[in-house]
Image (cartoon, rainbow, N blue to C red; front, side, top):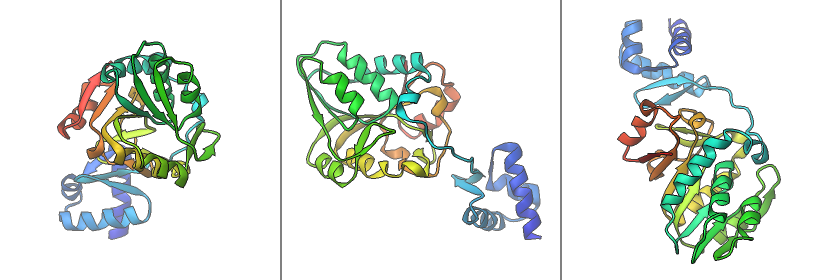
Length: 256
């Protein structure tokens, strides 16, 4: 019966994490069309999420901790990633640093380097505070509604200001990154979507900074599809097997 088969699909995904339509069809002795219908019903019920060629269980997402707390996690790894990101910033470039703990680490590295002329656009108060004391860094701070937990601005005012600018390189972090779903976060941070979209529209190149804990995690809100990402900078702690699907999508992957 359909209900029994769908219950078995859930148990199969619990055991395997992810399964293809073809494998599920063979396991239960039904056609792939039947499995696709089952998966669609389970998706509509909020029990699974579809991935290319198959499905996996939805993992419960807890709210992302405040940015100040995240700065205390993977400190050395984030610093290494930030130092590698400096290689992608030529003097005289116009860059954007989105709010985040790894982008804040990048801001600290920028502040410790001498520049003849560098222009930085940000919506984060901590990044603004670090770079406002740096000579020869021209800083543009984007105003808007304030989010105290993330220490940043967002909303219509921020988005309209961003759309009047042009950025050569846009650096962002992530809560989760997945080769099928892209960059994502939980529903409580849905306010980010407009700011991320505006930054994506005005930027020539998007560079994602991600420590090893961020990979293959998929949350409920897609902030950026994978095809939008040009480069991922991570650390040596991220296995090559985890990074291969991103390289197959044409994304440049760099390890610190």
